[in-house]
Length: 112
Length: 116
Image (tube, rainbow over all chains, first blue to last red; front, side):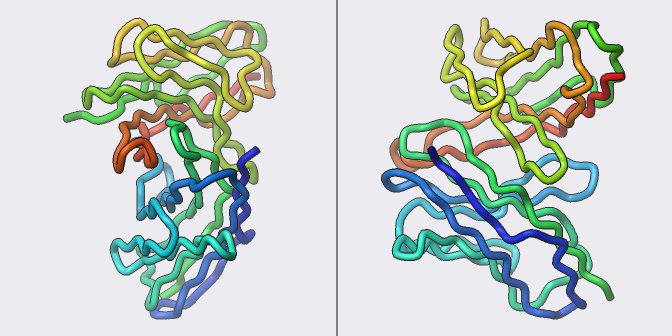
């Protein structure tokens, strides 16, 4: 079945550092890929998405590129802020499926 | 639009008790799902629905029941609560974009359930 593997956290960075959170997936066909963010005590919000190979999703300075050849969708941000501290989830939806398969989440902690 | 709403926000149950977690959405989304979030496990799919009157099991359905009599509502019933069901429960609704290849999910704020 489908699965998502993302790097374990927590990832601890200083403000303005470069962020990478790795995500790889296993799926049949051509899934859509997502990054969701969960701030403390809140639900999940869609951060960005990509629906086909080589698509780049971007939002709020974050970006991720759908790499079919490496089955990856790594999340990057050039300069993190304290307000980016949250848990980040990589997820996929298989073609024609209305549900998501999630990775285990990566906690990001940014200090001033 | 209120989006996806869930009630209650917090609940404590004793082992063996039953209860219903409520979920409603006002976006006229066809698809709705229930997930549970446990530390170190990410979110796992419990049940989902592709339209009123149609439900199916997800990855971890045991001990839970759902029904979908209207587009708006998708309640989750715990039949006989067990400590293993202590978790945070999220309801989500979605619609299809880019043909049938992408389903953007909108999540509710969650219900934190403790079973003692």
